[in-house]
Length: 267
Image 1: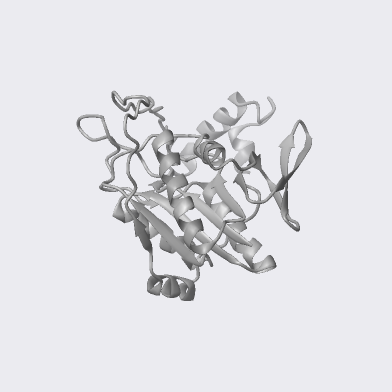
Image 2: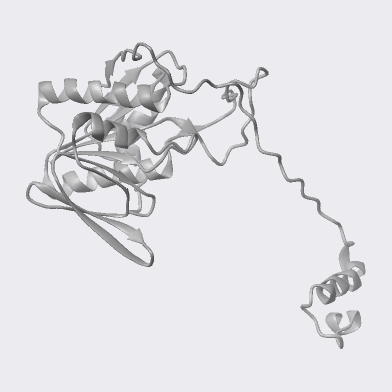
């Protein structure tokens, strides 16, 4: 079973996001980077499939040279090979991204044979795009299902399960197929130290994708951060002198009955 996982390098979602002075890009000077939780699960699912059924797993990303970091993280958990579609770091819209991935898949399959399964995360953590995987499937004329939280590999087929209305929708797809998975399909493993050391010694294949001519996608005007909610903290007092204020606050919150008192609280 040969599996390809497509991921995107994104800012670590727990970090505070700042913009460049022209508001056109995210200021990445003090940010950590990762892939989305959905894509972490896609990487883990690829490793599990190969462990159970044999074959190989490949991870692919499109972006600047720094994307090699995320590729090596994937190889550290057991992905066999990595492909970097190296760009100048400028943002590619979903249409151009899908076209570049399609060309890379065709080139790899011509050299090494078909991928039985191409996995995507359900959406990117930064832009929330859902469409790259679907566009790739349409261009390759392969069956596709999205939002998957269960996969079973059969003989020439894949059974995919998706949550729906308190139950499950079950799909059977002939391979080769394209599937996007959601966080929760598995529990991703963390890279071990030996895994990281092995990943450092592996080669990363590089390809330079061509942006499609006559690209007519949306034009970015500016980025805007959501309004931050300010929070405050009130110091009720220090030491025993704060006890009456604490009791009064608990009474206001309805956590004490009317008979409670500061003296009773301290006794």
